Image (tube, rainbow, N blue to C red; front, side, top):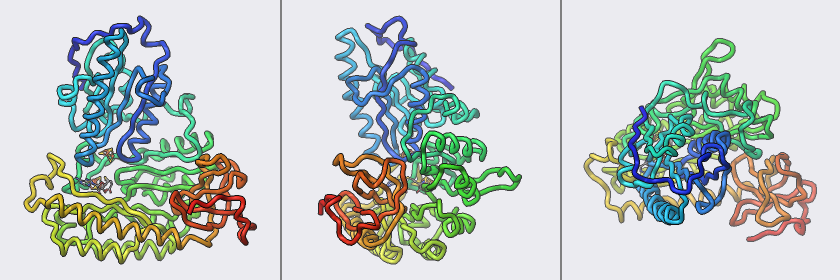
Length: 480
Ligand code: SAH
Ligand code: SF4
Ligand code: F3S
């Protein structure tokens, strides 16, 4: 449902052919990789609509903010940015110009019309399931309407957003995200995602395959499959059978040009044998797995509605490591969930020590209105949360450093992704997702080169050609 309210704002200085003249859009993205992917797709749709991307608000006719609602601070940031945009718009209006503001993403979905009331600078509020309607919403906004699009429509936005076959996909570089699944039915008691992204939906096999083929044709060598519960993905396979993510990654790996596959984020409950075995059997599937556990206390896991125990998670990690011993594991942790005692927190620290992570993200519990956790007894004091977070992050940082150190001396295939900070360097990516700095002579962007990891530094690892490992360090500058 489109809710439009006439606006009293005049669009002074807007050329009569505003619909076709070259327009400039500045896109700011917050939140998860899915938002990054969505911003790219919206950018594609806008470029078909005559918009050119610019990298500053000052140069833009349209500012599109793709928002995240996962924690309180994220939404606050959006509103303070909207305050600054209101100032800019006022200035533009006084000079006879204008500025349009569109807000997308999970804050847009959660706030809806409230956003326009709280931040009248906003012209369009558009939720994650209606991005294909963005050009239409902007056209209405240009005619002075305020547009709020936050329903969960029956049509598939992916079918209606432009793709490479329409010639509108913009270059993505050598790595790309590809959304295969969206939404969540898990309802962890702390989390807004099931409300902002809606029910779990899997994209059909043929759409995923054709998007991957187009990305490969455009020079992409590594795809990261995205989903709020990516390993809950399932679909009708080309052989008539029901496929899970394990089967899908095998098919994607067979596409000419796709040399590396990653996926995120997985839920422990959906990690099945086919996917675990794919880590054993499929060299294209990179040895990195983001597998959030949130807490190491069974009492808290139950209150969080995670539907697994700490022991089940650890057993799962053992099975995954049996299949792929060098796999790098990462996780998410929440400290200070309502009712979390010192003992519960120590259980989390014990689990971290037992699993030994290569990386992890950790957060203080943030009350999200409307979620069951918000109304629970035993909300934890901010100071206690901070103290626990500091201790947890110190442990994780130590494990991350150790993981990096253990890589020193190994040879690894590095995908060269982008120029380095120094012109004589390139940044590659290890199979374990670490950035690796190499000499620019090692190859060109898009090459996969086998190199020896020589040293850890503050910006990542450093590698050298295998044949010069005996000490020709002159080719690479080390910063640590
Ligand atoms: N679907 C993914 C990602 C969810 S959001 C998953 O299930 O893991 C990413 C992370 O944000 C979560 O894993 C959780 O650690 C954190 N998070 C979500 N809601 C939160 C809240 N209310 N307070 C603090 N952290 C939260
Ligand atoms: Fe949120 Fe839990 Fe769903 Fe992840 S699984 S998106 S944490 S409700
Ligand atoms: Fe944030 Fe929405 Fe992603 S709340 S983490 S942008 S799914």
